[in-house]
Length: 203
Image (tube, rainbow, N blue to C red; front, top):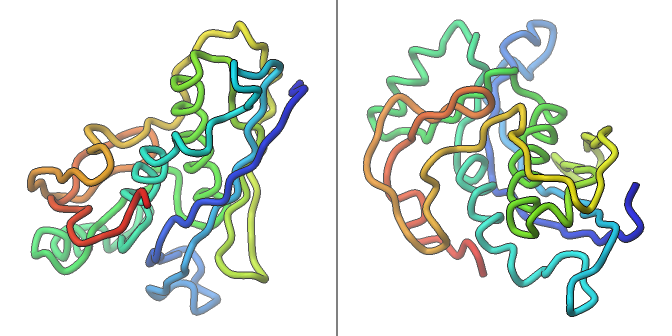
C-alpha cells in the first residue's frame, strides 16, 4: 500500500480508433479523440528531495506514450481490415499502432499503465510505482486501470505483461524508417520514422 501518492496529467495526443466489433454503433468507423491521461504514482518512501516522483523527469515517459497515441491510428490485432491499415501505414498515410488485446479506452488505460509503471519502477529503482491510470476521451468519458498488486519499496523491477514499444527514441530524437505498423502489448515492432519531427513533445 502506498504511504505517499502524487499525480501527473499527460497529454497523449490525437489518436484515431476503430472498434470493429461494435457493429451496432458508429464506433465501427474510424473516429478520433484528444486523449489525456492522469497517473497516480505511489511509494512508501520519499527521495532525498522529499518527492514521490520528480515531475521534471517525466519527459521521456511523455515521449514514450505519445509515440503510441499521438497522430496515430490504433486498431485491434484481429481487425478484419488489418492488412488494409498496414498498407496505409506503408504508404505513409497513417502511423499504425496495433493493440493485441483490442482497442477501447479501457485498453488504452491498461497500455498507459503498463508503459508508465515499467518506466517509473526503472527510474526510481523500484521505490515508486503506478497505482492507477485514468484516460479521458473527452471531459465526459474516461476509463481507469488500477494496479491490484501490493507494492513494497524494496520490490525489484519486474517485467510487465504488456511490452512497451522497443527502441523508442529519447525526447527530440527521431527513429529510422520501418513498416508494418507498431504492435503495442505482447508484441512490438517498429513504425515509421521521424515520429517526433516538428513536434513539441517533452516541453
